[in-house]
Image (cartoon, rainbow, N blue to C red; front, top):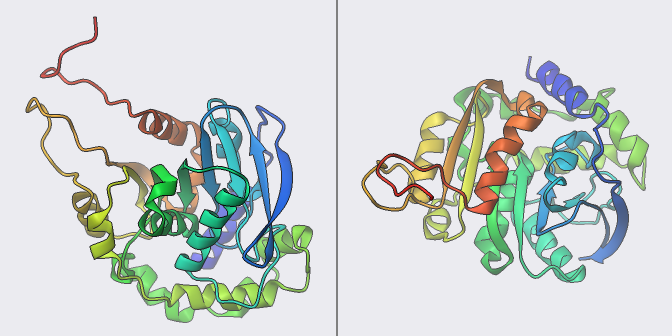
Length: 291
């Protein structure tokens, strides 16, 4: 069932995007790999980080949508898309360090971050390990501990084997773009190992000063209690209308939305992300109204 849902999600987000500005692709040497990235739009920089088995194309229409108001820099991480693989495990800290080194290599000192799934965990680790490089982070389907995943997903993880990915759209997408078209099995092995990587980042999350927007579906792979706990660690969960500014971090739960359905809701995501990145807050009755 999960395999079918994942394939459907990849097919959805890999449909042709409606381009608002023609992206410009380039490569840069980062930590022993040639990292591919694309830049589109103008304005303040926004780093976009894809999910596992994905690439820039399969992120779909969210990139051109966000590029309407921002300079979007979409990255393909280790072994994904057109970025080369190296003899090193894929871990969240490793990928976060890669993104930090990438930013330095292209001359971006600080940026906002938008990450989905694996990319969200990388974005969270980037904020933890390199807080000076992250202004604000919008993270979709994020957990800070393995126990935070939905119980059904935690039960499924031991069943993830390489054979699940043979002949799938993920394999086809990989072969179309990869520098080494035969490298998909090695990538699968590394990403399966990533699923088993310990995630115990509660103390680190509690120390974060970076404003975080948590986005997830109400039928996502993250447990709702865990999401609320994370929001509270970030200073959220207070009652408004008390004459005090709201916390900088925010929480959004999308209705009737599974993990693979989130990225198909382009305009809803943009409506959530853009005000957050601008620091805009809806005004309540207890707050002074703008004249």
